[in-house]
Length: 93
Image: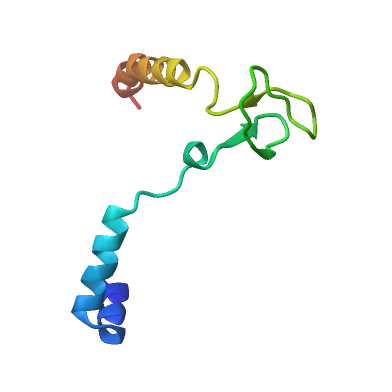
């Protein structure tokens, strides 16, 4: 709230609404939209090229656009949290 008050004191309301509209219309840049790949071993970010198997120039590990098996890992973690939630709340302290 304090930041909003400071912004409104420094700028006009019309200028604030223009900034909001501009932010809504321009989606944020992502690694995929910029063509970037990441090495999960050394955390190097590399500009992607069209090839079947890309390797990191620093450590020669495989490059990935997204973390492999991230959705399966998330599903397993959610399921295990749901299973452990009940016993954790039934234990008497």
